[in-house]
Image 1 (cartoon, helix red, strand yellow):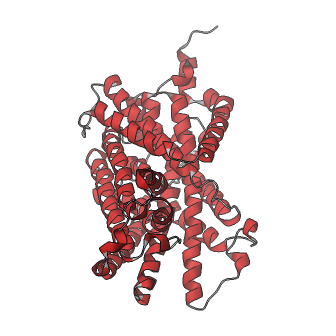
Image 2 (image 1 turned 90 degrees about the vertical axis):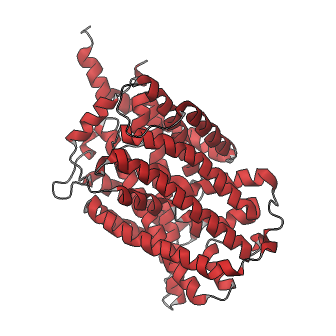
Length: 467
């Protein structure tokens, strides 16, 4: 069963030493990376619709439920990232534990997650910018802000921001991190301004009924807003570019999750405490809340923060996508010609350009709303595989150096699989159908190309006796 051949921890680490990424990230940078990619749609877009249609004020519990699932995963990822600090994240962990075909399926679904997710975020960024320009009297023509399926020519702002951030990533991780840090500060400032202005006027009667859709609504809400935690997986893709991954990765992974969960719950509580949940069914619930309270200037400031927030999400999604592709190409599962770093900036320029142009095309010309929910199922699948892989690696490599050890790993892995599976169960049937179709397409590509070109396949041929 060569499709389940594994690549050992030592092989992963040896490959990492041969790749000369700039080790420019510290623990604080990883926290900012996590906050940058997680806090975006989960605060500025999703809560309104999720509260109105799924959970009501109990959306706070939906965020807690989602964060519990991610909390279990965070402990496991912290051990994996500190033990095997390489690019590739859950793809690499699956390769070391469950075998090549499972690693490919994880990587293939991460490709969809980041590509579709980044395209959706670029579309949201365009909508916010278009709204701000319209308020300032600079309305862009619809033909330049809508995709052809919606009657336009192209979504030009989405294309431009994607290409701009792609160019930034070509300059290397150090420069990208500086911009990300500034934008995250702007985003957090906008969130705290919202809380400062709106929290004093919370009316607890708006919390009644607290669970209008019952516990099923809370669960369905968690399945929807888990999209807000999608970037959580992307944090560990930066392990190969951190200064002290054995310390920085656990701090960054767990720290960013705690910060983001507190922000999610606080914003949801203030939002639903000010506006009846039935009136929050719109794509800008935070800005809408402030406008309804009479804070026009505050609403504009929060809108600016939303633009900054969505910019960091888009930047980090493209970054994570390139690192996942890089790891797969380094292993030969996709052409190794894309696995080349620029000499000046130590950035994988070919795959970065390819990803940037694909995301720009999808966001500029393709309506991606039908595929967006697939991001959730793909990420949860990766979480489950990585969770099982963490328990397997503890048994398979008992002597491996583990700077961070997950407590009660078998129990945590079981709870992680159980909670992620529970949320996956509440995704729509069409999402599941598209997931299976996408996975089947991925398997076809694996058997037609990846299996035969894999570096592990070459190693097996080298050691096997000639027929």
